[in-house]
Length: 439
Image (cartoon, rainbow, N blue to C red; front, side):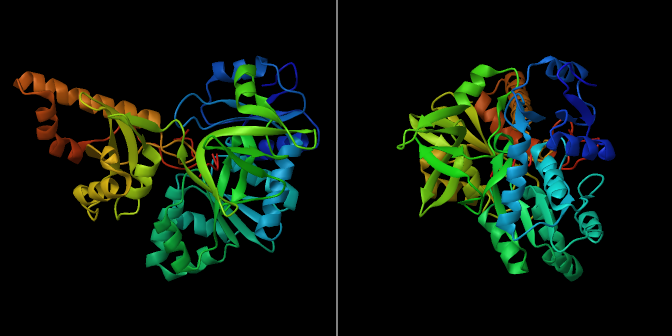
């Protein structure tokens, strides 16, 4: 499919076509829109009919982990600058192993980096399998080896490497393992260090053409500042804006006057963070804050504490309505027989973050539903948890018991059997839907 202004919709599973169209777009040819498997035709037609910012080489939809995905217009110069900056930061061009969806910026950027290095990328097929990834790595050519992953994939790779010396050796052969899309816990960093894995923590998003801060330090000409607690980014990798949404573009991309009389274009990330000693620490999302009894509580900080405990590495914190406090945090965690007891986790959160941050609930789930890039699908998790709580209320009403009591009495059974309507594995297969690279 092609629009009147030349935007070409390319199925991401047709790799030969995608690579050829990408090369053409980077060289000044027609812009492209990589499509996920099973893309909604109406959504595609809407994008093909929309006006594009001048200089658009690619349109990428964000992963939409907490809402409706946005269509981001990127120029060839921004994409190529990001690839060059990455290679400079990692020690030089090399071969890239693609284990993330190539319709998101995570996978696309590995294709752009491959085009810049002149080395064909190697793809990992099917649902994510650590052993299959390491087998595919044996087909990589070139002087250096790179791969980009999300934390859940990296954790599973470490699980394999810790019990299989050959897998550990294969993982150690990567010159860099970029991990982004979510915060990388201290526990994951410790495990990687113990195994001698060249972990690099990546922070960025579709609006910055992928990762632009590695291990807290800007790459290339990227600039970072904090305004009212928000991380803001500038540099040549910034997107042109959002397709068909000038109001949102104006809200997120702002021009500020410099001291020399010029101006700089900044992207407002919506992330909370700090600059300590020139290094960026992202502390969470500004929109993931609840108010419990008049106290502001960061859900991301709750997750950070919980994920330091065995069995809670993928824990999610959500806000739930509370009759007395307005809102209270709740945890959702994948079922693990070796998990540290909830009471211990709750006590640690209370001790470090205060009483208002102590979660009211911890609900087990067989597998957390995820978006195609491997990030948790917060919308689906919240919907599932809402249905679960509604069932508690129905049980309580039928038994003539107060709702809170019914929830407590039903909790043990719900934890044993809770699961969403369907599961999505962090893979690029047709059964799944960034590197948004967001840490």
